[in-house]
Amino acid sequence: MYQCVGVGGRIELCGRECYTPRNGKTNNQKIKQTKPCRSSHSSPHDTNGTSVSTITVPNPPQCMNEQTQYLTQEKYNELKEELEHLTTVRRKEIAESLEYARSLGDLSENAEYSEARDLQAATEARISKIEDMLKYAQILKKKRTQTVTLGSNVTIVKKGEKDEHAYTIVGSEETNMLEGKLSHLSPLGSAMMGKKKGEEFSFETPRGVQKYVIVSVS
Image 1 (cartoon, one colour):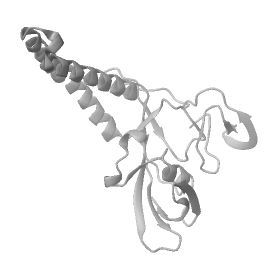
Image 2 (image 1 turned 180 degrees about the vertical axis):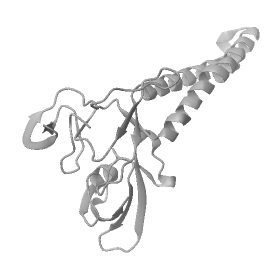
Image 3 (image 1 turned 135 degrees about the horizontal axis):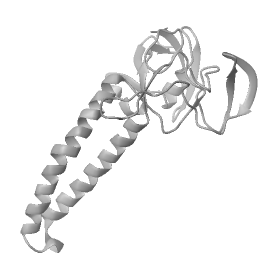
């Protein structure tokens, strides 16, 4: 599925050492990967012409393009709706606010004008960010696997304790700790990637190294 594949569950950014597949199988030869990872199939387009790749993630890719945004279909749709609102409704509202503020006279001491300009800048920045996310979006299509990967539901327990903690591994844009959505790029998330039920893993925290065990993966 990828030109760069997962080995041992670790995620390495492009430019570092990684393993590459040969004839559909992974060999044991390390090479330097200097080109961005790409999925091996063509990218379909949605109704608005935005390029979207739908990928199955059986194992975490060893090399990932830093621009790639891994999104669930729900998050992708949510961003599309937000973009539509910002580029139509919100832009019009801000333009009207600016026009009104200009009519009040001296712009150098016009608080309403300054506020509207600040809001305009923030809105345009958000529009630009969403457009980039959608441009580089890869929609996650979950497939049952025994290893932790993007889209996995994982339950873990700290060694020596009994309380279990459940997380869903998501792309960085969907991170929400209140909902148990953990980024695959976070210290905890990246430490879990590629692990199986019963395996131990550890990661660095301000309090030192923390050790956990994978209770379940689904």
